[in-house]
Image 1: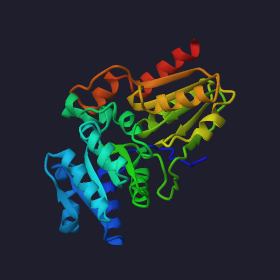
Image 2: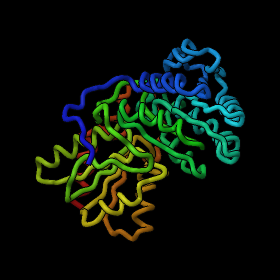
Image 3: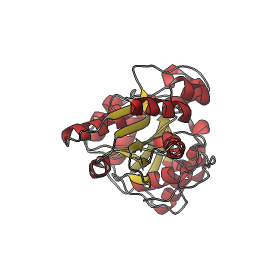
Length: 319
């Protein structure tokens, strides 16, 4: 079981952790390059241009071209990291990612920022509830959903060690701290954060904090909840799901994403294929588009606050 912080206060901004990790990688490896789609000020990636202008490319508002350039750089031996908002890093460029990236066996490391309700005032056109579902369809792609700054920095550095398509989604701004600075992770392996015997929570990304909060409140009411941070959604830790699903009264998946094609779907597939007869509740977004609002308003509008998650779970348990 992984130790987590008891007081989950807001940590450093995730975008700063991404920049810091890539800066360190640039010092260690002359083949690391960074590409932006005209969001350098919003992402903080302009600092990478200051660090080494020859290894930073602002392609402008031309995301599909950015993926093509990244693929070309990969072909010539470079290790590209690219950033733009989540929908533009996946939905808008899916054909380029699939063919120039995955099909052509190139390496492209992608940071898709502000997924789901984190999009805030940028609105429906910038909202992605479907990015995980799309990237899951690319053979051998790796998908991560960063729970906090410590995990995000580790993911960026880990991506640099592997070939292929790697996608991490995460807020640009601060999210609650979950992990201690020296926490070790492993791609493809979930982290057990809380032991429990009644209900199994499988959460990812920013909603891991809410899952921990709800588990603590339910424990006070006599319901023991086990909590897994499934930060790698693909490849999913099937063995951990199967092991921890045994003898549970219910399984709850919690994600800042559509319940179709994301973490909930991935877990449902494992339960069905392994013939595990445990009721499943998928908490996420169902058949909805994005809208304009503050992140706090949007989180509540889509039913993803700790209070709303708890209400859904209590109702599910009563059934």
